Amino acid sequence: MSGARILRGAAGVAGFLLVGELTIRFALTDGVVFPPPSVVLREAAGLLADPDFLSGVGITLTNWALGLLLSVVVAVPLGVLLGSLPPVERATRPLLEFLRPIPSVAIIPLAILLIPSDSLMKVSVIVYASLWPVLINTLYGMHDVDPLAKESLRSFGFGPLDVLRRVSLPSAAPFMLTGVRIAAGIALILAVSSELLAGGAGGIGVFVIQAGSGNRTDLILAATFWAGIIGLVANLLLVAAERRLFHWHQARTGATT
Amino acid sequence: MTRTVRARALVLGIATALALAACGGSDTSSAPADGKGLEKTTIKVGALPIPDPAALYIANAKGFFKAEGLTVEPVLIQGGAAALPQIKSGALDISHTNYVSTFLAASNGEKIKVVGDVYQAGPNTFNLMVPKDSPLNSVADLKGKTVLVNTLKNIGTLTVEATLKVAGLTKDDIKFVEKPFPDMANALSTGQGDAAWMTEPFITATQSASGFRKLADTISGQTADLPIAAWMATDEWVKKNPKTLAAFQRAIAKAQQLVASDRKEVEAVLPTYTKIDAKTASVITLGTFPTSLNETRLQRVADLMLEYKYISSRLDVKNILVGASG
Image (cartoon, rainbow over all chains, first blue to last red; front, side, top):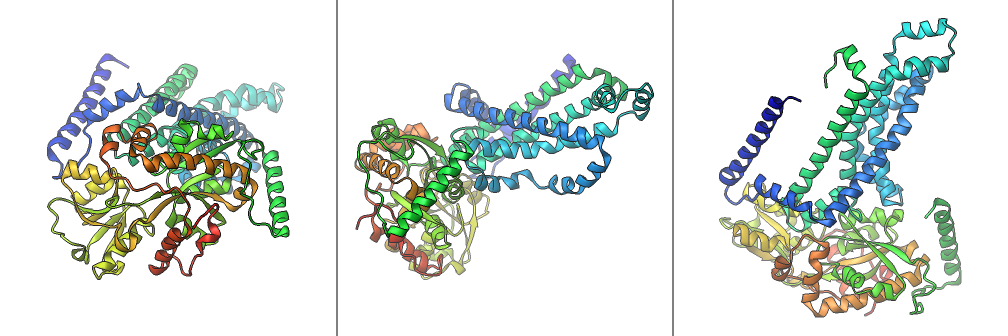
């Protein structure tokens, strides 16, 4: 990122905060109470010294990482398998297309009832939600493999596993990572939503429930601010990983992210 | 705990329950006081981050559970009704709940028990609040208006209905709209409602921040000293863990005694498990903390629910109380 780009981005954020601050301080209906950005940011800074909040962030991030990891472990092999065996893919496609659009947050109440361990319940709904982008992107990646490259390898006497290892997997890998990046955002949504709906021993969502019951809208927003920052940082890291690992892919397709 | 152990425990529990039923035995809650031989030494107890379950955190802080050989892990719950599936799944052993949710569930056939009293409403703990420039001056003025409650068909609507009755109105004369407590004040100020059923710390906060005033105290007359919150567990858990339950009840009763007799105890513990700071804790209005599970008092809640058609037939509460007196 160039210096000028960073500067313009910072100016945009500052402008947004200023407009928010002025609107809340001077333009709200009489009697409406809402914490302005300056208060929220001050509380957000204060949360960095709050051991309860920090251990909550640790719990949320652990569930998030575990859920994301498990979904990759399940979805990538499944996507490669379905992508290599078109008849199986055609047979399972209707089921996938039915399950995929179910809003993942809607399965949380069911998960609460069925799964007798709180963290297992949370990780399960995260896995369920983040499975789809990884699976679908892996499938796309497998479909996108250059048939000529596969044919060439076959004509040199390479077996199907070698073709998979030398051509299909490397070619589909950038798609898989894009799937993981999309899944990372969804996993964070589910990590916090499951806490908001189910409560728990700790977590960003649990902190938000506490703040709500204590009439602390400023703390709700401060915790939400950090949830947003975590999502942003995770996305930036994964974009950087994509660039570093698959620079050849971007160069080839001309994609910019 | 692994699945197999859980499954075995479940089978064992059912077998025990059947054996007890066969013997015609009913009372299994008498247990030795030494803390040894508990069926379960670590339990998860759900609680809302509000003043009601103060005794749970005091019992933990003062080592009352430890003295019984019990480790209690408090788990924050989202609401009494939301905690029901969690005690059913086994994610929680015992949970904080409110009587209206619990009696509704029980009359719908849920196999749950009330194992301890937690909180009882007092004057000005649940008020109908209006903005300072509101044209409403009495409950009778609510005719045709919108009243905000945190949950429909629960304590809020029940106590508001009882309050309306005194003014000669029924629930058909007004409109109930669901709104979370933190959003109520702004909703009233922006015209999304005319009055809101609030509890602490929201009553105090809206009074001081926006000059809201009290239209009515919904805890009076028919609802005076209304029992509000309880500890609940499933029938199955109660049958399977009689000694653990007795140990929990003894420890929490000790803490409840402290809470009931000294408001300072509540004020001191509130900032440790809620986001209510010490300053707010010292000024908010609190209800009372009953030290016994009294059948007569709790039957009143069920009868009130029957009168206002929350339940369709009389619920005999003594069947769902464990360790009751009176």
